[in-house]
Length: 207
Image (cartoon, rainbow, N blue to C red; front, top):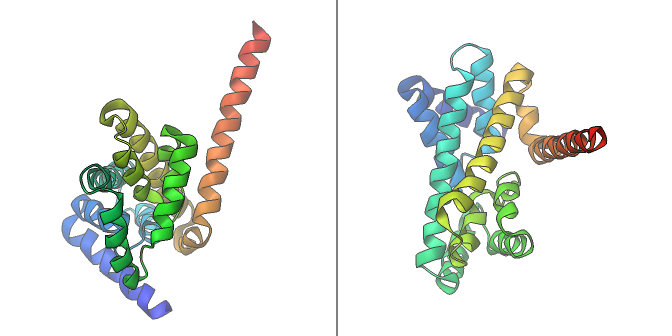
C-alpha cells in the first residue's frame, strides 16, 4: 500500500511539474469525481509543494476550488437530468470500483433533506460525501445561482484551503492530514462558528 501511495504521489508531482496549476485543477477534479486520486491525499501534498516553494498557496486554492465547483456542477446536472432511479442503477454498477457506494448517496440525500442549503457547505467537508451532496440539490431543483453556487463555493474553498494549509504547515509530515482530514476540517468549522457566535455575543453585550 505504501508503494502504491508513493507512486501516486510521484505521478501527482509529475503532473504539477508538467502542467502547473492546470495540473492542480485536473488532479483535484479527478478526486472530486471519485476517481482514485482522493483530495484528502492530494491537497496536503500540494501544501507540501507550497512549503517547498514549488507552488504558491493562493493559486493552488483557486485551482482546487474551481475543480471542486466543476465536479459539483457535474453531479448537480446528473441529479437534475437523470433522475434518482437511474442514478441508483449507475451507482450500483460503480460500486464494483469500491470508490463510491449507493450508501454515500443515501447519506448525502438525508443530509440535504435535514439541512437544505447548509448541507451543501457541510457536505463538502465530509469525506465520502463531498460533491455527491450536489446530486440531491439537482434532484430537488435547488436554485443554481447564489444558493447552490454560493454554498458550493464556500464549502469547496474551506475544504481546499484547509487541507492545503495543513499540508503546508506540516511539511514532510503532510500525510498526517489524510488520516485525520475529516476531524481537522470539522474542528476548524466548529471554531469558526464559535468565533462568529462570540463576536455576535460581544456586539450584543456592547449594545
